[in-house]
Image (cartoon, rainbow, N blue to C red; front, side, top):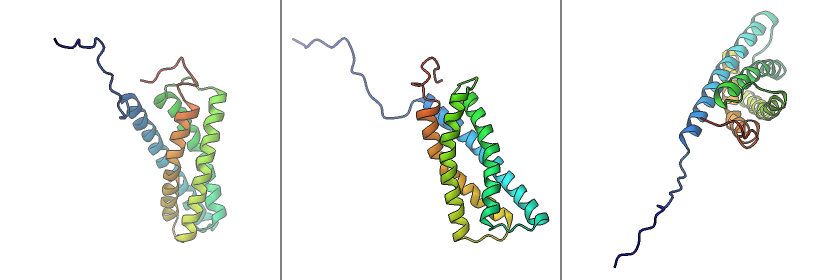
Length: 166
């Protein structure tokens, strides 16, 4: 006599990320890439202006840190709005969420500034474009930290149970 077949098939657990999570990572990366490009352009343009008209040196830590901070403020705001709307579908954004986003982005920015100043120390630059490239490398180092914080804390589905991911 044959053994009775179980009515409920075994559920397979997969360690692969779900399609929605992959799409979210791609959207976050796209927003991050556009923010990095905007950041690069702002740093390059402002440093070029300072170099050509104000006598700034591209390896001056004070000028570079100030310019990088200004570019971060602009890019952080645009990235927050794009991530809230497109990446995590948490629209309209609200103040508490924005404060969480800025605090995690500020941590990533602190890492970015440390990396940037270390790179400038190790690789003395002579032209604004070189400093802008090093800043791009520094921006990329904080991207993973920013994504993890945004996913796990700022836009977490458990923090906003009525909102569903695609």
